[in-house]
Length: 226
Image 1 (cartoon, rainbow, N blue to C red):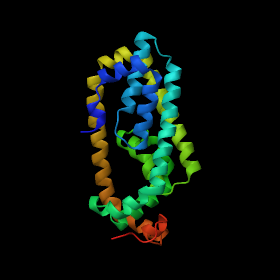
Image 2: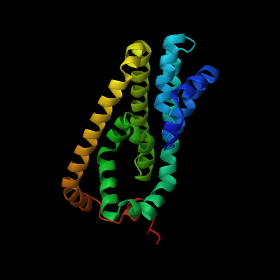
Image 3: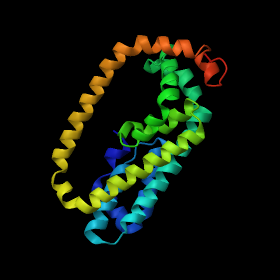
């Protein structure tokens, strides 16, 4: 069970009433670093709270959410860049991330890293880990920052304004929306797993052609330890 499930929306509402924008900034930032706290829930809750009470300004909510996303993601990127590679090299095999698959990851991130960082802001698992993985795969920081800021800006603005303007209707439909999103997400995940299984050999061949050295050499960590 993650902290995202432990912290209830009622608790977040209480925090918003007491601490306002700081709650949004901190939870979004901590989630972006790689800790599974309910950052998106805090953003949505703040927008609903602002719409119903008018005690918070919606554009300040957007601003602090963007700031939290950018700051947190850059901390996560730094952790991945300066320590994540060692973790992947030493313990990746325990979760079936062997040398060949790590090479595929490096290749995919170098080819499509910007898309992963941008769209990852809208997917719960990637929202938590995309920055870490970008750092571990040595994505260029300036490129990361661009897609990170763009994704954070679109995500914060879209979610905050949508829930602020249509909060009542969306709250009534929340159960249906959750079911639809859950089914859609599961379908996408299953399709991705099937696709990746079929394409893994092809991707491995491409990765081997373009990445001649070992994963340790590519990630700048020398040879992995035992």
